Image (cartoon, rainbow, N blue to C red):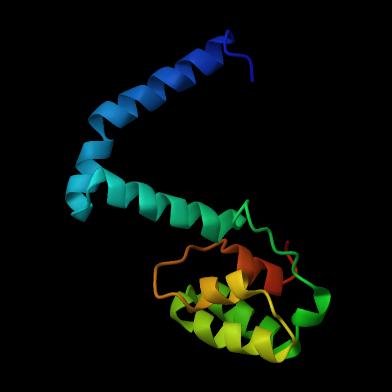
Amino acid sequence: MLLGHPVAAEAWIAGAAWRVTCRPAFTDARGTTPEQERKVQAELVRCLFGNPFRPVEFRAGWRSEAAARLATAIHADRAFDRLPVLADALEEAGCDAVGLLAHCRHGQSHARGCRTVDAALGRV
C-alpha cells in the first residue's frame, strides 16, 4: 500500500481516531488496561493465524475421523470449551506439535475461525 494514496491516509486517520476515542471506552468496559487489551488482541491474532515465529504445518495424518467430527461440532456450536478434547484427538492421531496442542488446551477464549479448528476441518 502506498502511503501517499488517499485511501491509505483516510485509513490512518480513522485508525488514529479510533485509538484516541473508542479504544479507551472498550478497555474500560471490559475492565482491562491497555496492556491487558493488547495481550488479548495478540492472543486473538495467534488463534486466527497461528504464531508467526513458530509456524506449524498441519499434517493430513492428524485429521482423523474423530478430530474432524469434533472440529465440525466445535465450529458449528461455537463450543470452544471442547478444544482440549480436540487436542486429545489430535494427539491420538499422532500430532506432536506442542504449540498447537497447548493452544487447544489453554483456558483462554478462542474465536470462530480458529486456525486449529479450521486445519482439522481441512480448510487451511
